[in-house]
Image (tube, rainbow, N blue to C red; front, side, top):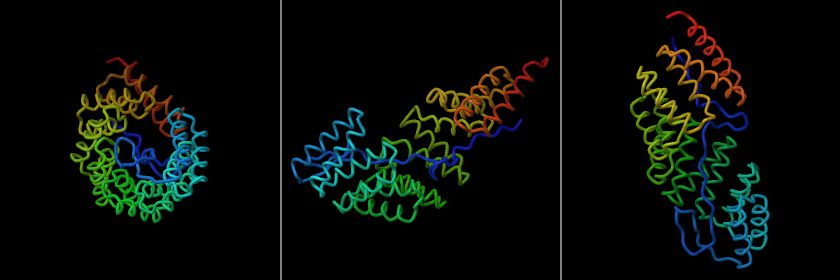
Amino acid sequence: MVGYFPALHTLRPTIALSFILLWGGIVYPGVSFAISPPKIIAQSGNPPAIDVLNQGLQAIQAGRVQDAIALFRRAAQIDPRLAPAYYNLGLALRQAGQLQPAADAFYRATQADPKFAPAFANLGGSLLEGNNLQLANDYLQRAIELDGKLGFAHYNMGLLRVQQRDWEKAIASFKKALQYSQNAPEPAYHLGLVYLQQGKIDQAREAFRQAIKINPRYAEAHYNLGSLWFQQGKLPEALEAFRKSAAANSNYASAYYGAGLVFMQLKKYAEAAQVFQYARDLFTQQNNPQWARNAQQLLQQAQNLNYQPR
């Protein structure tokens, strides 16, 4: 039997991306600058504006996003040169799902401080999310020119290169992102996807392993590793990877589907039927009817084989 794996590259219904963008962290008014923990930027500004900005940060930390949005806007009104107010407003708006206003806020941050690299990087990310590749490229490139060690700018540039199917430049960007954002698993994972596009299976496997090393609960990385093992006929390794994928995200339908294919190869039809049923139900809940039908067909096949004399 030949198994087919649900594609991880399926476009989202609302944005033309199949990947997660990385965003700069909250910016605090202060006297120094650091990449991690959250960015702190030198800022001389109107003390009342900074007080309101800090109130907005407290609101974000308390989960009061709408209050934070109002406070960041108020801080920017008090001091239109306070770039962190616009920047944090952009992050808060994006968290609230207001993508265009978020992009506008990041743009205002770049105008308030033309050397504020994270604002350029997040503006580029917003434009990439809107599939405006040319402008996204321009702003991401500017971010990298301002701060060549800004890992999430290199990562988002890698995603842009993937959209352009420029695999070599994507690899170069993801490797830079790995160098400068060593605690982020996404660059390694997407590096693995690019290697898969190139048919470089060994490099892809190593990249997925690297992503898992950074984040052992990276469901998609475990799933892709499992699919590679399955294609090479290494069924125990594949099953273990699919199990880890499902353990990392119990709603990840593809992990159950993959496990079902392994169980079918092992002739463990009862186990296969169980996980295909999970996969079918999850695909249905997640509005993925094509893969729900695929899982239903395999579920029926597993049930039929399970009842046959062996």
